[in-house]
Image (cartoon, rainbow, N blue to C red; front, side, top):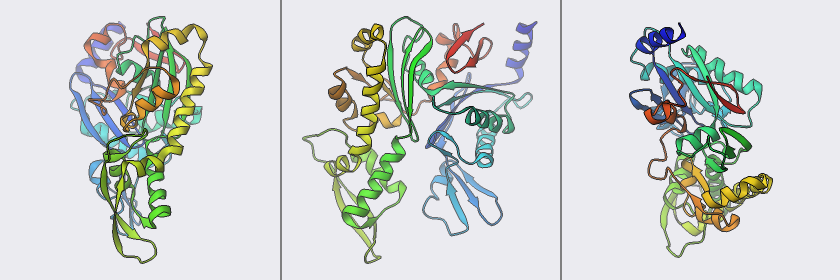
Length: 354
């Protein structure tokens, strides 16, 4: 009977995976692939409460809107900070991605490992209010590991570091479960803030978040390099109030972000120290796997490898924006782990196959 019901739902509904990130969100529909890949930004008219734009169009407004219009990110450090705006953003994503409107979709969403029960409920409630029939939660670290095609169901230890916009997830995974996990609210956004602060303190230059992010992506560095890279940093001089352009180098940006980078590296080292001895040999052989947009920071993998003495790999470097949860719908994985008919997550500690 359940098989017949599932077939009916598959015919008239869709299963959707959402990588709901602090900085960017990606939506994947089973059988169609990635259908949305946009910033997690919403533009709102403060006078009327009206949503003016969501996603890419809203991000273009950041720092450029009149006083009564605000471009905001409804998630902070990986969790919902504005329930109503998150709900409307999710509704926009679901409506834009769905082709089958007859039955509401089932949705799986990745969440940080350190979230509270209240924060989990907020994600579920917001997604259901946005139009989901059922909502499944999975820890981002586990989703990242499966997305990187690590052998998570085998007895060996897998060590993964997922650096997003709001959080850094560190996890040791074995036998389909998370042996150890840490969620650190220091990630890509913090590095942007570091660059903004550096510009103010070093050059008395006021720059915006978009400028800081562009500089980080272009010449950001976590490890000393013989190659010198430079780019202009444009903003407003705090003292004169006039526009100004300063040339900054990768060495400058390394100095700007090194404290936050050290926090991330120290958390990784702490996780290694707390890993059961039986799994350390596996991790030394397999290496540390990096995921998330933040893992692409120049020289970060080399720094982690130097500090931990463990080979560090970035398996999704060529496609950093592919959402970590989408792997559940890939045909070669669905036979054993499938949201469509078999997978459900009873807790964030284990994956149970029925």
